[in-house]
Image (cartoon, rainbow, N blue to C red; front, side, top):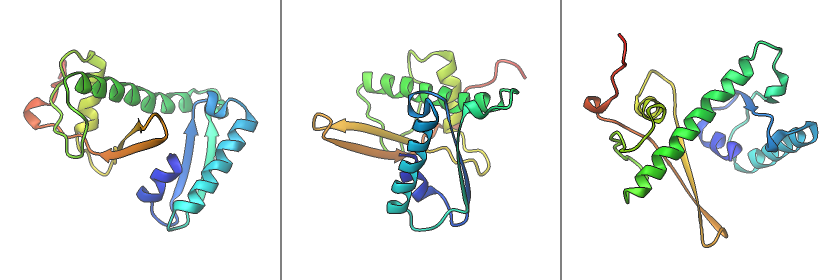
Length: 162
């Protein structure tokens, strides 16, 4: 999935640093090598340009300052918030679609409200891409949608402190 997304969202001669938790996908050196190999195969079949450097690492590479653990915590938190938001929308009969205007969803945890607002806010050059993969036909096929969250300014959560 990462190689597929990068093929459409990267530019020629870009450096890529792929950092993953040391979990099932890269639980040991053998799994990490398998991940790197799979990335290379998928990349070579989907990309229209070359990357300059691709580095694949796990949080095990951390030098003791926990920076890599902190970096992987950010997408973990955002993924959890996205799951909560999409579950609440689905419970309300709303399917995520391209151009969805995201109001604060009823029943969201405070953490997910803050993270959803972060995802919807456009800040500088930071690209925040949401990819929803849904199993269809009993898992025989997948429906993939890539879209942006947006939120009208009057609904943006205000900080509790100045």
